[in-house]
Amino acid sequence: MKNIDWGKLTFSYTECEKLVRCSYKDGAWGPLRVTTDMTIQIHAAAAALQYAQQAFEGLKAYRGVDGVIRLFRPLENARRLADSAKAMYMAVVPEDLFLEACRISILENLDYLPPYGTGATMYLRPILIGTTPKVGVAPAHEFEFMVVATPIGPYFPAGFGTTPFIINRHVDRAAPLGTGQYKVGGNYAASFRATEPAHEQGLGVLFLDSKEHKYIDECGGANFIGIRDGVYVTPLSASILPSIINRSLRTLCYDFNIDVEERQIPVEELSMFQETAAVGTGAAISPISRIYDPDKQLTYEYGDAPGPVCCRLFNTLRDIQFGRAEDNHGWCTIIDEH
Image 1 (cartoon, rainbow, N blue to C red):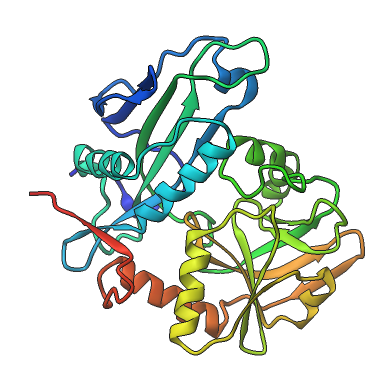
Image 2 (image 1 turned 30 degrees about the vertical axis):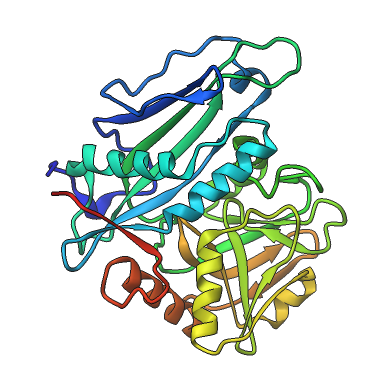
């Protein structure tokens, strides 16, 4: 076990010792490799650099109350990466290869898996890039798949506290019928013009739909949810990343007999929610304290403490991930370290 102050970790990169890699050449994936070199050699004209032919994923491993390592819903991440790969015209990483790479990455970096009770977890970042040199606009035919591991703390500084947000109508994170529903780097780079100035003020960003700027789209790098009169409401849009955490929370809502609505959410409806939150792998659930609309000079208030529905969903999800509750849906993959 490394001498790391686990409780002080933030959602930032801490270098581990091993990188898991695999190359696609001549129409086939090669064997998985483990290296101590955290850098990669890539041609300056590689398609990933020239035309952003790239996709990635994010998932977490948890050291449970029983000492067991649980990887949360990795098959869903494998499938989402496959969808992104197809959209970006890249070779699809087979599900068994994806799962094995994640398993090896955890075991090879076991000293960096935070102990139970520290509030920290191990984050895995699978990455797929096109490596063929390209100058003409065309897809690569060679690819590199990698899994980066790092111990992390909470995504938002407040952890499971509340975070204020601001609406941005002047930057679009993704175009209609574009790549918003896929996990590709360009979507996030496109949002920096809005998110970085907001982060400097301690704010998250709420993006609206890119066509009419009338409906809620996403919270920066996370899905949006609202609780209205006991109903769990989340946006319906072709530009929203299908969040695995959001899907899991909706399943828990069905378990709790909480009604779920996936639909367009007009900005004005923010005044009707009792609770709002950003949800995703990084944040899990990050309740929102208030949302400021600078164009309309309005502030929607939700309180400085997480609401009862968000608390119930968050605690139940964490109990499953850390082995404190029965995994009735078979979400956790057990990683055998012996």
